[in-house]
Image (cartoon, rainbow, N blue to C red; front, side, top):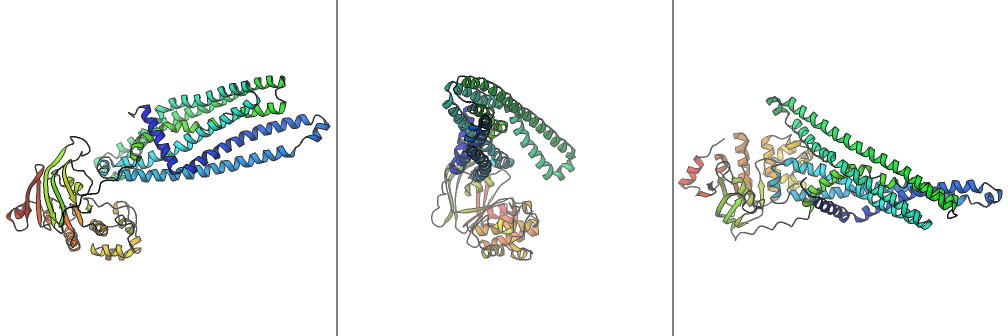
Length: 570
């Protein structure tokens, strides 16, 4: 990544703020339960040591044995054991539920950010980017709270409590204990974090490569076989998997060294505390049971920091994800509503300049000086060669592209793109993308207008019939009619159609166009096309050439017939 550490830190804190902004009570409660669990475990070990030592000393004489209270310490030990178990269960339940809820919210926010005007066009250049951001990167943020923020906060709170408790007994002992505990507890993870950075970055990159190659292998098997590249693609996938294994092995070695470091440090701390406690006991500062309690507390003192082992391994991946996602997760300003055209018009272009990089100063211009008024209810077709700017103009009319200059005013519109975008869902689910609140009656009414109601009614499950990926289960013409039904259901007065029958055979295309004109009613139709059969349903033809409106011809004029004749009829 090209980000500097300050940028990474800002991204990290920005993501953590989003976490706690969504579920502050649950995430804070998770940290509290983690602290309770750790404290209960350490206290249980220390109290048990004190109890065993005190009991042994009390048993040296009959008088002390009879006077010693066995029941209160036993009750405390049982309470601590129950508290540790309940705390661990509650911490796992609360933290995982909260983290999953936060990640679901972040996933939705990220998707809405990519669905904003102009973002979708940029995403189309690399469609796998959204998939990786929604899956790999969002999943990586799970570790940010569960394996980094939670154990760090809990470890520091518990460490502060332990130091304070020992300070009550002896200040010098507490200072030495604090220096060893915090020095090792913070130092080892920091050193390990640096050691894990390179393999973690390599793992993050290889994981995306592996998934991309697996998707290419599954989705492009036919093309790969025809090109004789199936074996090469399998080999590339195997090589990526081997690199992923190497990165995992390197990270596992770092994790093992962290555990070994804490084990060694725990022995050193215990030895140091043994010397200090022995000196205090010899000087009469503490008795034997308290000395046993302090030693056993020191033995378990590194347990909170040992929970950071996995967090150190996954921290770099989470930082990469945070750096990528933080800019996209900022609340985006709502796009300005399109200006309304004058009464009687469906759209107006006034000296408009359009380009693909409208957000960048001096971005490439595709169309310049566009000025045109389209009356309500008109049928107009924009013609031109490939690259003339037809789809760019429709994107601007749909609000997906901001003009670089000039003024654009339109009625609310719906865009039917060249591809029929259907999802692996029910027919009803695909239709309700246009109107989530639509009733079954409204869905069937839209299907009837699109000429697809009979097909749906013939299905055993009707509207609940499932489609495969990309609309598998329907023919090309049926898929187009379903997209048309979605357009009808949306109810926008301006329909934008980008080559609506491209890829369909002649008979199917003519049937779809007939259905389209029959259900258009008083809607305004704006088509982008290079086919005669599509242009023929328009009352006005507009030729885009040399980056401008070259010719405007209305039905009945010689120029109209000339433009129509010049188109191919596939």
